[in-house]
Image (cartoon, rainbow, N blue to C red; front, side, top):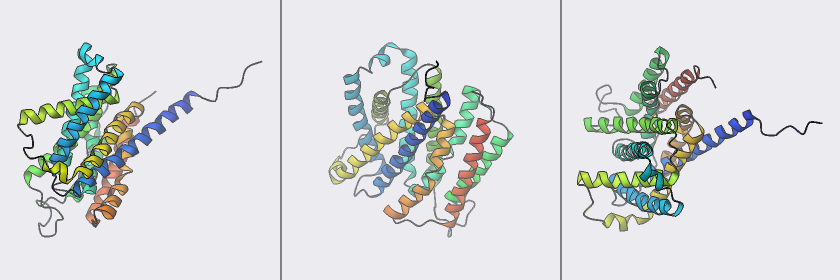
Length: 314
């Protein structure tokens, strides 16, 4: 007589993994938004000083974690693993650095919406590096997302400078574009690591962001000569570091379960939460242009991701 049917079918296991990935994606977005919002309440610390404190904390926390669980061995004995892990660390550092600098030019919620453009970078790089399709419909969705981004950013070249919410200088657009690029590239680099059987642990991820960030700060010559900001804003810096660890670890864990494309769609669900955080904690006002732009971005990302999933067969 046959035994009872297993309660865990392949479909239920797959669904469980997807739900875990979605949950980590939501946690990532909430931590990401709150960490950015905390920088707005600083007394003296600037966004780049917040990042400096975060990187130093990541370095020591990651180092202790590596030494405790032995995750340092693959970094020393496997050149392929070290390459992909370092590539992810480099992209993560610069994604965080440029994103925090965008907060000098944009509200937290608008910066989050504009950063959803990273799904296009993910698609383009996936097409170039992984052979994923990028056709006419993908291009249409890209233009839809770009239109939404323009409505949110309100560039003075297209909008009347007196009525535009922002007056972003040229370097500001470069910083925003860099944040979008590194954000999209980071997801692809993690997928490339998985394809090459390089599965980066959370402790390695945190350590490498800290280590590469410290190296970049030393090479650039930027080490804060005055550390008074640490004492004036120690409470906010501590909260920021804790939330940033949650952001980094949940990002890595989410991509262990779901694709970069699904991550992009789920993260768009947090757009209303980003505006809610701005309204409740930062006392900002939602303009009609930002609302309309966010709607175009959400629809564009949703359609784009659907178009990328059609050719895929399990």
